[in-house]
Image 1 (tube, rainbow, N blue to C red):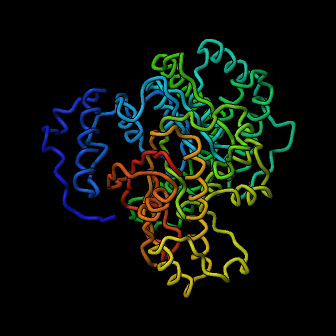
Image 2 (image 1 turned 120 degrees about the vertical axis):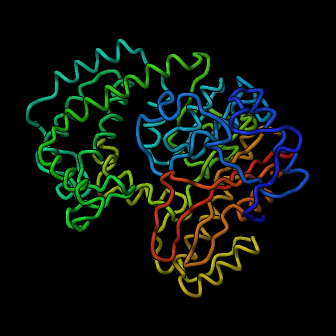
Image 3 (image 1 turned 45 degrees about the horizontal axis):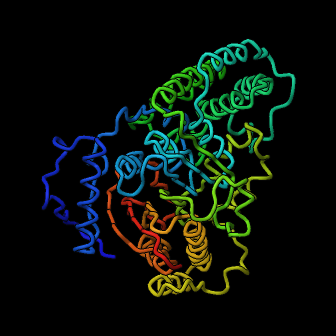
Length: 477
């Protein structure tokens, strides 16, 4: 795989530009076919800018996309582009995202008339995705909301949930008010409505915490972290002063009202014939003998298209990012967070004994790099090597679920390990091809700002480009 700076000309057959390209199925169909033809001819990555390539109707307030923030969210333009045509799938087909996060692919699949299946090991992601893709009766939900508001007590009658470092992250008056809201939510009988209110509470939690709103992983915001005259000094001071007097119930109400409007848009935009199924499941563990554990929601050979952006190798601490919500929603206690971290691809916690042997992935270029890294930092070598092995298992499961001739669209970013470039896209392309996939298209998109650039440590670097790889399932694994 080659990375280069020049923009490959993909206008040779037709003239495409931002002004002339409309966001119609026909235009995207023709453009995607041109890109596929060009890659088949050159076998070179094609630089694109998805934000300029097409206009996404209603973006950013499109249906329920903004119902809840989530780390490293996939740019909605990407699934929209691959779904707003009939090249890779047809209306009525099944689309899978095995690392669904907050449900961006699932929502765009439904809006494109495809049934969607999502999987994730993070229970908060599963909850958000379910609420984001479930049209609810607006009138009944609003009635339930007003009943909930009237149930919120003045003072909590039960202790707060077991949230990690609760008093470190929340002022006492905010802690008590959030506890009151949670008590009221517990009294909601309709499970779908209760899930909606929990997502609203989760959305509110981070806003009223002492965590820096500019950083994904919770970091305590302090006034003295910026000197007077710094452009963030006054903004930080105002935010901290507001937290001293804020009523968390007011913030919850604002969040709920906005999300009620988003769900109303979802009902208007979504065809009632399509639906999304979201499962708390680890795709790495899927086999022909175990798919019945998914309650027959998906069976081998039934998925036409997979669009997914898997976790990065140690680049995002997904569970830590969600830790406050996981606690307030009573999904897991403070002591249980490590278990969820251990179930995440790209995890960083290993015993010293696990790092003695240098990983061997079977990918020559990756193994050369891992050997260099292992000599200076065995832990980082283990993290990166285990990531590639676990992605190999994920590809095997995806291959099992796809129809022969079905497609996989993979969105990944390269990063750095111990100061060395970790060419994730190249390594995963090699892994996929060994697992029975044929590469049909490689696109390269510069990242402007998508919440992906969390710098893990001084040698980690940041992710500044995304690779979009399109594979087709061949006849043999």
